[in-house]
Image (cartoon, rainbow, N blue to C red; front, side, top):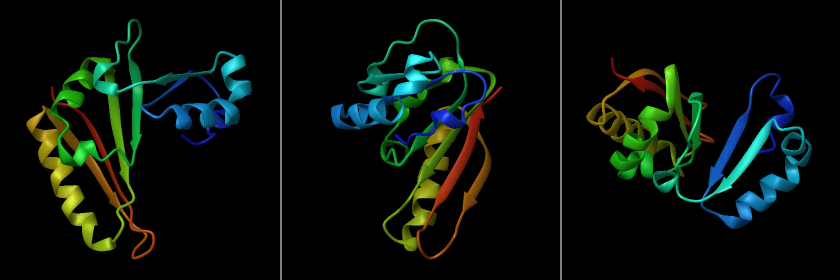
Length: 140
């Protein structure tokens, strides 16, 4: 979790991570945004997280490997959390450029199987560091 909340002009950001140390580090970097009510941090697994209230316009996941390994449970939990018109942004930094296409295909297959439409795929810069980004939304 990067210290990105100072760039947040309007709205609210919620950061979720399983790691206690990641949450602690994010709390240090984002103390002002948390105090101002612009940010909240939650420690736990996404599939077990219960969110009451408003939906999210955007959900970002960075280097969350389960989205290309096995994510049906998480994608099902995520779908009702997206506001109408909401988007899922998935970003990966594979260890090698040769894995970009494998990850892209795996993520697209899982998204489609879970009822999402892939809107955009971004890759680059190659070869170092290799990056892949996928933007999707629930179908329908």
